[in-house]
Image (cartoon, rainbow, N blue to C red; front, side, top):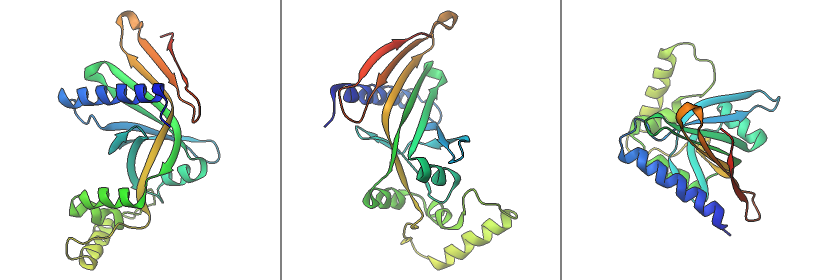
Length: 197
């Protein structure tokens, strides 16, 4: 069931996201992804939003990467979209689930050939002796998959962040910003309220 406030929050995000695209904001799909290691250490990095709908926010990565291990352990994450040109920011916190194999296969197939080879070649987040080692691995998979039919690696997939919290931030004069928060529990209608800047 999609509760009205969840629908409102997601539609509000999608309007702002579309505005960023329409106004030519560079890398408007970029978002900071924060995860937590099992020992409590936080980590953040920039990833790209590849899909968004009423279910949540989707990005793709190597499941053996640091973020993959963090998400396997905690299954929760935070996102931050900051569009400086729009003087706007959206914060998201939520649970994380893997996308379906069909979704991951479809997105993987849309990627350029080198990106698909890179998903096989890169042992993401692991130590690398030098760039030549990575280049050799790309060449290895280039020969292994000489055509366009490059299957998706079993360790490469997508994650969906299902929002339980969203906050819309708009810059104001004198740092009197506008902040509006949505609490979106898995069950129940949730709540929306203003927050002091």
